[in-house]
Length: 541
Image (tube, rainbow, N blue to C red; front, side, top):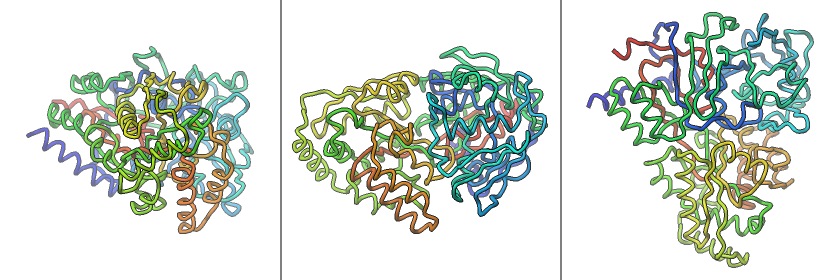
């Protein structure tokens, strides 16, 4: 009963925090070794400009600075940005909103002792926005509005835009925008894939693949008085059972990604008031991505059959009890004003109220396309239980209902990404669109042609698709933009089924109550610098 009361109190507290941005004030304590669990075997690489996974952000973000960030004291508000490397308030645009000037902290040093100047910031964003040949930039499409990055002097960075855009500052604040050393990039643009050198609150010390990554307090951190912790260790644990054991046994204080409801309840029952629960909607959605270069998935009739077979409404009720997925939605974060209503969703294939009619239509389309139902196709999946493997098993069963057979090929994170990016050895793959800041005009760039956005692994090239996105992106009137978003969404999910939405996620975090100063956000990529968090040993007494 004590555990249930603690859980209820925690949920009430989070509700207040999400509504008001306020929490009970406590005086942070210095010192301590913070250990946390990363639910992965390790990052595919250390290069955040290239990667799209929490398996990089959670262990590696504390070693880097970014130009801007979401306010760590108020991460539930996706529009509350603060300076990190820049000083003062977040600048307003001049020149009709097309020029943004940032002044930098003076005296900032990389962890090897070399100075960080505007040249490093420019080299970083040039690499992200205008990547050289051979360099993959996962968020290049976020910055279509940027004309140039200039450096009038060593402490000033100026972004010139082609057109004013309310999406620019949120894109700039993405937590993946680690500031890299120009000197390192000049020697090797891919140096950061295998090496860590930043200017963040912690100094990287050791990495044991598949085991742990550890770092120590940066004594020269430019944000005075931070960080509070002396040492951090990220433990890699792919199995949920191991993550739970680490929390229960106090070998780890937090797991930032989230747990399914049953695991949350089990932990609360076991730990009582030593557990704190924080919950929120999640700007993350699992996709099923067909490979448009593999027959028969180059045929839109086959792709339409795949989405028509999926019972999203029933799946939401069932899967939300065992997995970190819940909400039925389209390509836009469901709580946003640009998102489709239930009535609008039900006009598209795969969202209708009559499941049997949808599946009958799917079978007819497969027959019309001459689909070989005796063949077994490859479904590529990531070796992470929540929610990838669970949703993958569900999808294969959904497609079995219309006569399709898939073999699930489950791989660790690194090989999984290599298959998506390089070999393309899959017919359909689990994919995801998980973004840090709720910014739908930019977030939905995931669905652009693969030669425009390398993070679209379907290998689709469709200029009408790109044109619909561009038309929506440049629309300044919110009501008209919403109409254009529906046209873009319908083309992606219904007309061409270039990719398929499964279910949006629900984020439920559980951490030890002695871990303080961290607040849940709609993204598991935010709040991971760890400079403002601290430990209170008295909470365990």
